Image (cartoon, rainbow, N blue to C red; front, side, top):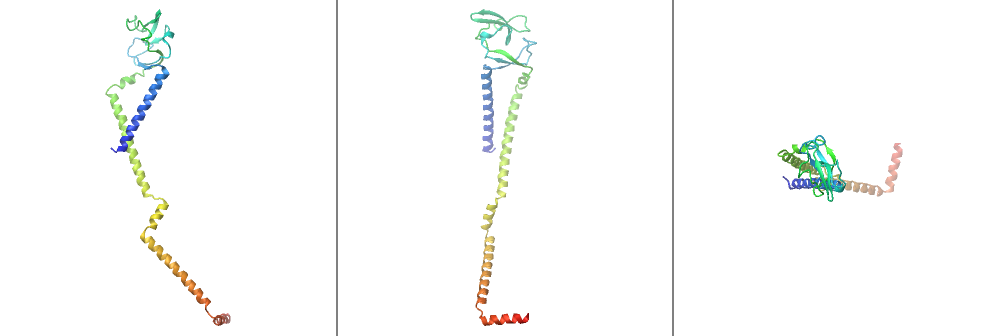
Length: 225
């Protein structure tokens, strides 16, 4: 593979990686959470949350503002203590709260409040499990390689076609340097100069004719008429 193609592929990979990093950081700042997206992996919150739903959480809501009825992975069902604030949660589909998971929930365990639900979008993560994700990466890299090869090929073809079609000025310069053209040009110039010299000599010969002969010629022409 040509060095230019390798550089192009590396450049494209860097651009994609930087774009993904910028988007991810922007989402973290916007939602106020280190990871704003979670895939529901159990039926503990069914029917509110189904397996493979994606929940979007926000950390911009302070823990002090969390109230009964909010979903912080599981639903808040009680405020156990106010100082420090301690909550108890329970899955809508569970019969009771699970110790160590649903309580006690303090600000230390708080990651964010659910604000959006993307139904069944989490199936994408299931599909993208190995080896499918690796195959997709290989396909993407292959597309980049083919793209760079075609790009370099088009550049070479364009350069070749440009060399065949010289601009008019360059064609004239090349023609002026051609030996046959120079010789023909000199021959034409010589013939022209020779014709001019003959015209000058004829003019001189006419001027040098004596007036006596010129008068005789005029009289003979009149008698002919």
